[in-house]
Length: 140
Length: 92
Image (cartoon, helix red, strand yellow):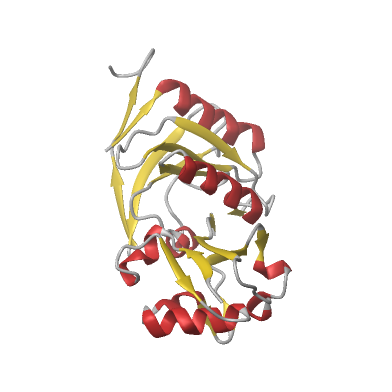
């Protein structure tokens, strides 16, 4: 299960809406081994495309080093699909290489409905997991 | 020729869980061959058909090696090499 604070959930959705129709992407860092997504980091989609995303390699190096210095890891890796459902594509699966990360997909195909789903992707196998939104307006 | 190499989580099963290893070589290609001789299997995770795999990013100090010669990039004593999984995908 992914437990995520309402404020971070909202930032991910806002980023996806803002970059629509291009795909948006980023990470939420958290203390190593904690499974707590705490620090929202919006990333540039170097592809600036409605069908692909790729972290800019130099920005990724900077962000990954920063996480290393703070003993953090990418707890959530998110991106948006802008015309299709929030389900990992074959390309998403082939690139997925953080076995400890929650892969969050947001679909912006419907302007008024939020599709926010989370997956584990390990060795090419996709497992959807429940998302629990916590904090101010969340479930808890 | 000691070069410090940072290994991402996904490849640490090949380095006995080590986050940082040392290697030697005058080019990235040689460094990868040296690493592969001690951590068998790491070479094919990084290189395919004589080219860096698109699923990985390799950095020499602060540069993406793709912009400084790829596998031919020249290395010197004290350089740092960082390997990260490329984060990419898409809806197709």
